Image (cartoon, rainbow, N blue to C red; front, top):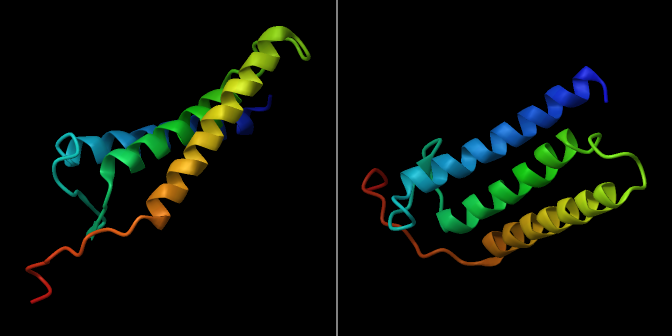
Length: 110
């Protein structure tokens, strides 16, 4: 694995896990709707789960893929776990996209 791959994997993992942490922290455990870059983020816990799955699947899975020798049991198990995490991230992204959020009354719009 080249140094560019390591940097990309670390950035993907850190960025997705940071967004998940910000969503959970700003939502006060899902009780409020956080604003990121001035836009309200509906379903913060679902979005945080999506970013956590994507960060672990893409970044961490990519980082540790060279620990096990190719075609070994550990390599196969890592591939399966990474695939499950990425599919879970995709499904939660689709759930967020297709759920209709309630209209938020914004005082700044009035």
